[in-house]
Image 1 (cartoon, helix red, strand yellow):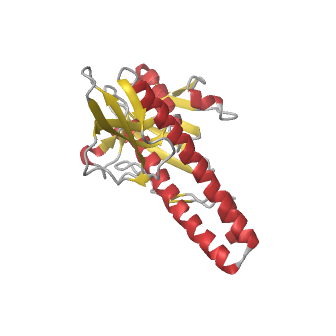
Image 2 (cartoon, rainbow, N blue to C red):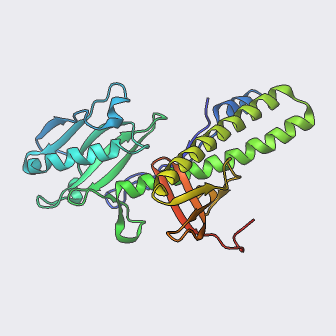
Image 3 (tube, rainbow, N blue to C red):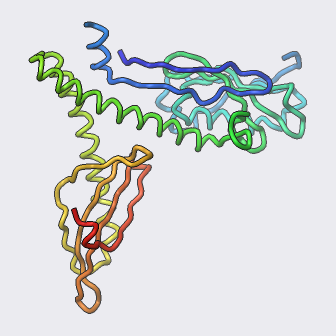
Length: 278
């Protein structure tokens, strides 16, 4: 089974749990190494509206607010939906009010989640901005979208590390002539290679759409080039191609596709100079 670790900080009235640092390992590699508040309250159920909810079995959530805060029920429901839309929160155990930080005109919600490893953690959410409250951050808060970006970036960093570990394992397996270790390393590398191929083909498709109005496009990069990894751990592909202007003068271009997923990529096209050529 996969190896996971998580660092959770206890939530207090003045501080919410910081985004945990966690690490992942490929299941096969892991397996190999193992083997060698007192006011009357009203309940509101969260409807299964987000796409993320449809893939989670038995999603039930009780959202509780004192009667004097009933006008904020829709905000609490939205905060719960935002939490469930992140990769960290698989199920909401409870959602309610952080009484010592709330005022009737400005509530602060406390949402208790369970993650995919069956560990629970709490977060505080500003009832007006719907941002996560975290005193360790500049400004004291972070949006759910920004938090998810941090989670994605951490996953990508771990993926890069795992790829390096798999490559090292492959070399060690070949040296030892250990067939089981060799099989596991090869399978791990094959998974990563398939991911890179899928993202490369996506970049090709998006670039073709972007240059469809250019004249006489001629592709110089036809097969998948070696990917480079930037400071954000995104894959980067260079694609060279030529075209012509209205006067049939040659135009030399190099496109760069920086990509982490089909939803997270950037495609740029610049003139190709002799200094850029490999």
